[in-house]
Image (tube, rainbow, N blue to C red; front, top):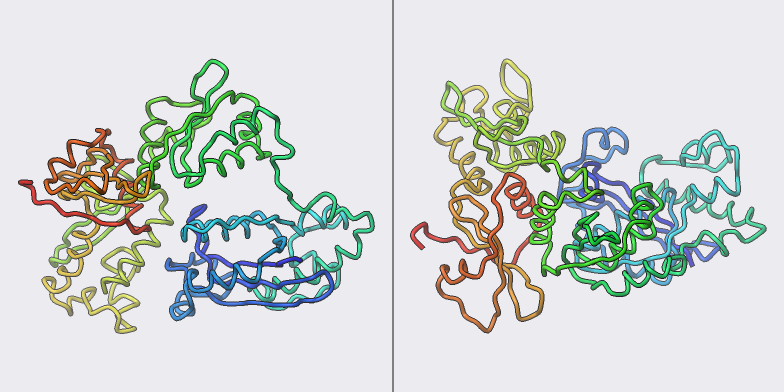
Length: 457
């Protein structure tokens, strides 16, 4: 049984995309026996180039179900199926990412119609879905929409099954458990790893650390490293002799430890993460009319940042979202160039700060609300989340806006005094990367509890 899938996404940074539309056809090799298609509210803005490509915009998705509301249906329709898609690696990655956010393991064998087409229909000028189906006479309507692309993939897959006289699909390209092809040393390293959240360290034969990573499932991540066919993955497979690890209980601490450990050890295969993670920051200033303006600029340690971002596109998308959420002005935030009012004022969703119609004091209340909620510069908080066992909790401490470290405490030990909590902390360096990790994580994830402390505590 096959589940033939097509997904449209918001675009954006790798592994931060959200699904905007999904279509799945359950196919038994002869006919479609079930189908599911839905728009999806990704809970994040769509990149402009994606809107132009698919025609799906933010307004269309406001009333659409969120992923967690359709997840059960996706599990049901794909049960006992091989996942088939045109560029299956992309669609499968997106689905796994969404299910990971729900804490649900979504493991499927996959089959890619791009790879199959190259083997069974060689010498085509292009293997993009649009051009390939056109050259094969397969009708394709609603290009770059999930239902149209998925249905075209069904027809393409049926053609490939007909052409597969040597049963290549059955014998070779369905991705069975890759452990069967692994070297014994790599199998042993995977077998000894936990399926928990944490940080892992790859060592060479001399014991030196050559790679540091974090994962919500260390065993699964090692499997990906040791079965990857990219150049770096193959080098790691040759050089790795041992793997050590430290479970953290939650992803925030894993991210913080990974960042610090890479800076300390400077592993051979972590070149990209040795550099600072953030490239852009959001700052504010008060203009000549008394209004608070937000602006995106290159990271500058000399300036006080409200929050930081890894890319300009991420920062701009977030600023659009902030402007909409807090009913601010696109012109004041540098998102709309105009000598008069901004675009949103014409839609009555900007209250007129761009033309001094709304009073600065009233406007600034909403701007300050955002700053207070998102700036860590004066925060005194304890971030409480899951620990490494069911009866343990973790704590990440921020004092006067500075990251102090993390620790663990047992639920049976009732901690009343925040000073006691601080005493169990493992001190860590406060730097802009740590600040960025914490701010970014809290924007995207829920934690068990955030305790606000008085400065004198």
